[in-house]
Length: 138
Ligand code: DAT
Ligand code: MG
Image (tube, rainbow, N blue to C red; front, side, top):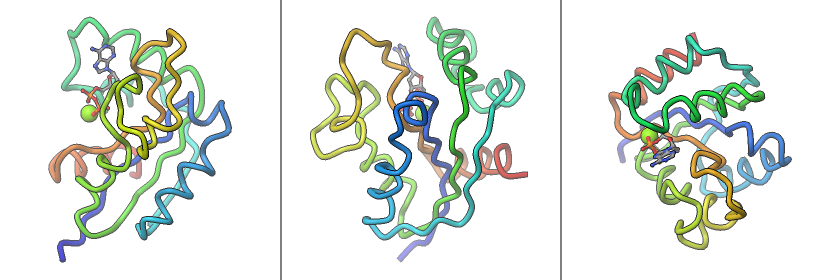
C-alpha cells in the first residue's frame, strides 16, 4: 500500500447546492480518512496560487470568479493511492460527459452551466497535493 494525502475541495456550487454531505458520504464510503476539514472563503491571492498552472488560459478569469463566489469546503484526505483514487471518484472534468457513478457524473448538472461548475477539486499528482495542502492548510 501507498498511503498518500490529497487536497479535495467541495467547490462553491457543491456547497450552495447542499451536496457537501453527499460528497463526504461517497468519500467516507470509499474508506478514505478525513485528516482535516475547514470552510474557507477563498480570495484571489489564494486562488491565483492554487490555479497557477492555468494562469493565462481563456477560462482562468471565469474560474477564479466562480471559486471566490462563495465558501468552499477544503478537505485533507488520506488513503491508499488517494490522489488517483479520488480523481477516479470525482470523474472527468466536464460533468456533461463524466461517467455515471462518479461525483461529477451523478451530481453535476448539464443545464448550460459552465464546465467549471463541476462540484469538486482533487490534486492531480503528489507534487500538486503537497503544494496545494500547504496553501489551504497552513
Ligand atoms: P480538473 O479539475 O479536472 O483537474 P483542470 O485542472 O484541467 O481540471 O482545470 C481546473 C478547472 O478549470 C476545472 O475543474 C474546470 C475548469 N476548466 C478546465 N478546463 C476548462 C475549459 N476548457 N473551459 C472552462 N473551464 C475549464
Ligand atoms: Mg486540476
